[in-house]
Image (cartoon, rainbow, N blue to C red):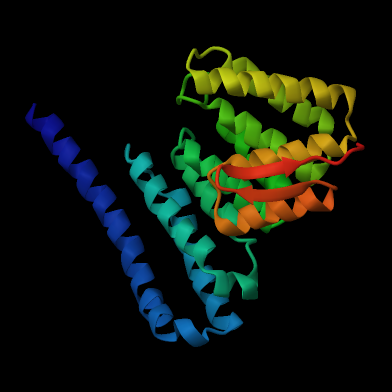
Length: 261
């Protein structure tokens, strides 16, 4: 019993020391960032990203001692700060996004919310859908229809990326079909709805691989997700570029589809 207690304490101290080490590495850069935030140059921002890259590489090579969830959450918070810094991203873009998710999903592949962030930031804003899909495929190896709950959404995110950013309607149809299969194993209303709409999307794509209507409906899926304001604006822009129209109403967005496909 005493040996087990000592082992637990040792593990906890080791993790804390690792996290403290990363924090100490980050502190000087954080202080510098706070004092130069308003006038930060591209060189300053890139130096910060280089420091962040060193920290992420450190986490990739350090055992998590059973604290993968904690590390994943911590890195995800750092990603949200990175993604939400509009001024910095206007200068350097979003190409660093997948570096965060490589660590997050390696530490906790069942972190469902992270997959939406991965799809949005890496496919839509960084323009790296192949990388997003690659990371999703790695994560899906650790998922099952009921582990975690509603894991079928990952197949939907993958299908969205394949259709909208790669134009790969065949693999997109397969991903939506897989989402339907997983969702159909649950009995709640949301899962039944996702199973139905995913199955219909897969069938439609199989029959109409080049359909504009299919792409509009997929952008509507993006719009209906719990997304940030800039993602919402991007989805509306894409829908209207394909011939649809989005009208804001008190009940939500009303979509007017084009008369012809």
